[in-house]
Length: 597
Image 1: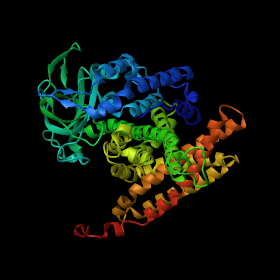
Image 2: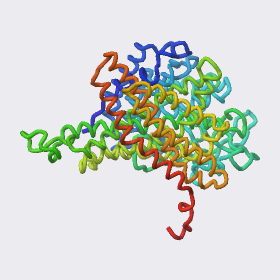
Image 3: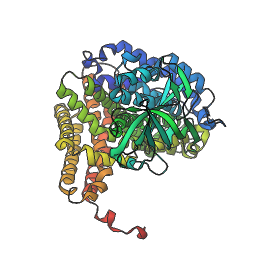
């Protein structure tokens, strides 16, 4: 049977060593995030996830969700009780706006808790995860009346939220959507169309579900410039805030999926359902992107979380399972075989996971801090700098970290050998659940194209230049300390490869756009390696300083330095190969006609 222990110690280390949470106590929301409060939130959150949600993970996957004859959906056994405990304890309110009943804690704190939530039970976590993005969109683009009507009960978890983009005939190309919105005399709209792949589209956990739906108003341009965003509730809300009649929206079916069985991924039918325009007509895509960007960061966190729980179980198995002898001779001569940990290739897989996941945790939490700073930093320049950095790195966190998480899940399965292919051990579920994170909220190839095609050239390349500067400053600090100088020099080289790749794109993508498309995935991966290298240098410097000052657990900090060295020696060298792939261009990639494949 699988196990899970929330990585509390590593989270607190990142919040101290990389994020530096205490440095922002003067900013709105951060004044409530003192060390004692954060400690309490993480400790109690870990306990809830380990004791309440994790025991439902395997059973929820095995049972799945059921669509009933009346179109309602029943979630797996135990989910309703767990969700009530979740909302009663106030977990959905962590980062929600104070004016609407939330605790208004920094996003970086709620992100730390969400990792535990997703590791413990990804299917369960998804019922609330998209509601957070819906709140962001309504708060940014909705009217004061809409915010007052919809946000408070979404913030408490009493009402759910979804994002409705995809239709049967179109995925990423949203200009093709056919869902229509017809204006009514009272200012509302009648929404008609079908949406697919809607996570938590129907469920029995909340009183109401607030669907955010993309549709085209009659007469609007029949492309992305004609898309509007609408609030379409499952149940209509009366003027006094009470629930009224059932809206004309229903779950047509539940998708039969490879993984995340405990979450109802629905086909949603809108048959003249009442909807309310959010923001300006024909400006819906910009409004939805607020929610999509929040969701993409959340999906990156899913990659980390599924990789983490798979890795934990692989480590436990490698300690207990005996197979063969160490290459250098029996490690435990009194036993018939040595533990798996003596074998270099097993260690290779586990060290790749350890270095990748600990770096990814730092990147996800540091990225969440940038989200906070983009809204709450003291000066406009600081807010713009944070916004530039997180805008640049959002597709990297979504794409690179979910690739990493899936790779760690499959490596964990490989450590288990044949037992990893058997349901009882639980690892095969983590592989299945991690796989979807590379696909939805914009497949990772789309993330790569977003990075290269949109984020890189925006504002004359200001964001990537700020990233290069940030890495350069950290490198200079690392080179000044003999304990971290080698790592810093290796990161400097990897950053140089990224700079050369960037220059190659500037020089070669304009005259042949296929060069950008051919390079995009390798460029995203290269950026991810440098971003994780930046996080590892921050951690290496912090741990080296702690050892020099004889502070904290010396063994913990020594392990950080060894893992940083492994990342530098075994992962960062890939930067050079990726740069050469990028410079290979598109010619051979695009040369064959389709019938030659």
